Amino acid sequence: MEITFAGKRALVTGAGKGIGRATALALARCGAEVMAVTRTQADLDSLLLECPSVRPVCVDLGDWGATEEALREAGRHVDLLVNNAACAMLQPFLEVTPDQFKKIYTFKETVYRGTGGSIVNISSQASQCALRDHTVYCATKGALDMLTKVMALELGPYQIRVNSVNPTVVMTEMGKLGWSDPNKASTMTSRIPLGRFAEVEDVVNSILFLLSDKSSMTNGVTLPVDGGFLAC
Image 1: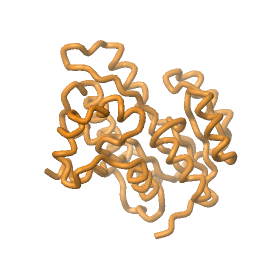
Image 2: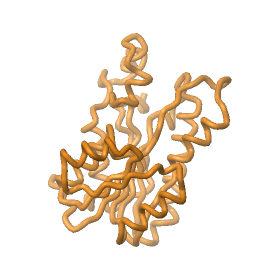
Image 3: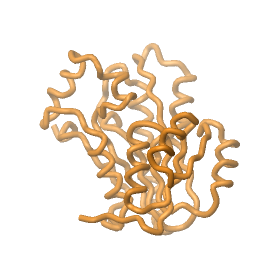
């Protein structure tokens, strides 16, 4: 199944590393004009070396004013949005601080320009299954899933589809933060019928499908990319 985004303009947040970076590169290979948003200039510099056609936008999405200004300068409307920017701060419920909730919730806001198109929010299996020491992470991913559904309801009349992908652990730098220890990792992989964590490409392929016209009647779904974890 061939997917093309020729003539489309895409915006990917958190595009400096991991899933966001791989998604930006995949969209460019599929013909999209890609704006890559991250707060780390060094990541943008290396991304441009790998794919010079990408348009870099260096901004901290936690700064609303700076974000508005940066995206205003980016120009005309966006057809495709991948809401990927996130951070991981792991802690037990009794050790959660208000600042941790505030910081992570900040990354769940959507920026969109234009009419018609597709939005994909990057969620997690943790939105639907409690994980020890992931209090804030689980709570915010659960909120993101419901935000996805409300956005699908309210933006559907404008022909804007909104879906989320909900991966199991992906061994990006963020994934390694919580799951690099083999003993801890085995407690998760033993519960995944396929017996392994996800590769970045597994998630990117699902994102591309949901962004594309191949999923033109798919709206408001939370798509597990988890090897069967949530099914069991």
